[in-house]
Image (cartoon, rainbow, N blue to C red; front, side, top):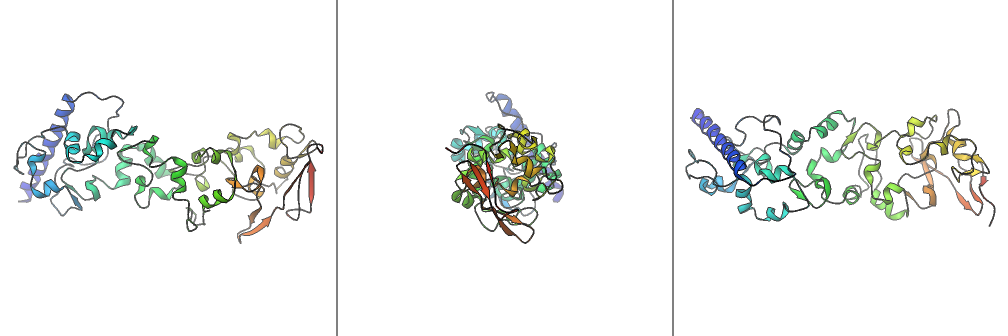
Amino acid sequence: MSEMRYIFSVSLAWAVAFSTVLFAKTAPAQTDIRVSPTFAARGLPPGVLAPLTGKPVSAHAPFEAGDCKLCHTNNDPKEPGPLIKPVTALCLGCHEEFQGVLKRAHPHPPAQTACTNCHNPHNANYPKMLLQETGQLCTGCHKKIAEVLTSASVPHKALSSGAKCLNCHNPHASEIERLLLQLPFDLCLSCHNVDTMVGANGKKLQNMKAWLNNNPDWHGPVKHKDCVACHQPHGGNQFRLLDGNYPKEFYAPYDPEAYDLCFTCHKEKAFSTAQTTTLTRFRNGEKNLHYVHLQQPGRGRTCRACHEVHASKQKHHIRDGVPYGSSGWVLKLNYQQTPTGGSCQKTCHQERSYANRKAP
């Protein structure tokens, strides 16, 4: 009996595959649609579209009801025959809501070419009749993302929890590029809006939505709502998923390569030139105070010592205070802007002021 089931399953799978190819040849040509990798290239076995013989997790209602003729030429489960229409046309004949979905500006090519690229039309061991677990199904085609996930020492938890890839992407189509569910900035803040989130290292992450609401001076990339200007969305090898080098310590010897991320926008000379009247306004006369802070042997202050990287209440992203040490104690900067420059007091040093222009 089990041998007969196997023969039936393989025969039915070949019938579905043959029908898909047949109708694909006769269907009107579609432009700008990438062909999905073959099932074999995705690590799927022959007969993957055949009905399961065991107890499935999800099943197609017509198949469960024995209504083979809804999709096939015969109503005989042993000899269902070829499909009566191309696969996608069959699916959209019942799932009419997806007709509008696939007309969105950015459709998913596998969803356009054949629903069976991702779904078993009969039943499956996964929800929604998926051929594989969601993450595995996506990375079967998106090989570069698979490489990132495999090699990343700092993973993005969104890809390993809940709906995984579908936390951020619509698998069928979207009005937004890259099949995103929302615009990137809004999508990021839809998760980073709680006080309980922790990073890959177990440390608590900032409630970014609340922070931005309470701090009006936004960093340029944040102002442009471009989180990926600084962060990798899938995974990376820098802390906090940063897209380049940036010191995570309070003190660090100055090395331009350690600030690769910052220097994609900011001029490196503004921090390595001792005397200037043009490269920065943080100077006392011609003395470059960025240089003074960063270039101290063994105790060079990193950007985080004085600046908030996302947003602040004061201009120039100057922070009110900075967590100092593992205890989380906040070192207050007590920065005050003045008509001729500014001053700090009772921070890393006694009160000191600077002047970069004449009094008005």
